[in-house]
Length: 114
Length: 112
Image (tube, rainbow over all chains, first blue to last red; front, side, top):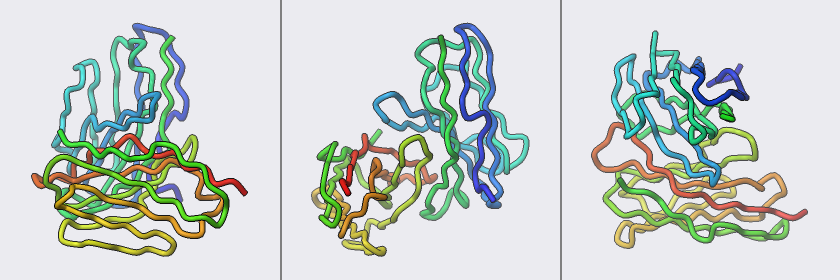
């Protein structure tokens, strides 16, 4: 069974479009995250949610809007896509905010904006 | 925000050799974690070391932490071709909420 899954794995779209990436974890974790990995493999946190509540909101354009319908899901919606949004987006989860706890990562969604 | 910085960034070794990579950070931490990323995959947790620990082992992995120098090292002994990957350190700052700051990563290539 896949612990943290993301869909789609690849996403190619044009500038100005709106797209969503979905994430689900079946680990029973309370905390979920979105990360962005750029072309140089630098990984930066974007958001974290704990039991559906927003905890971390980094300096991310408000075109990016996370939504957590329940603690097993954390989706990422991106409006008005720009070329600079091209990257690999990773979802992750951890047991909760306490810990310290390791984070479990999904396989990533490679977003290409043309 | 703090950020680990691994050094060196690319390492190519023969199978069976040891691989060592370093990570430095800038502020106080609760713990430091190492992750592996195979090409085209997500990150996989390798080992976590708390700020009050100096050394930790897991199989062929050995991690050290020197909080006075704000640095950590990851040693992979008797490397295998399957160890070819990027390795990242990540720090969890002392203010909690399990927020990890990742370094740039080390690319390790193990030649069979």
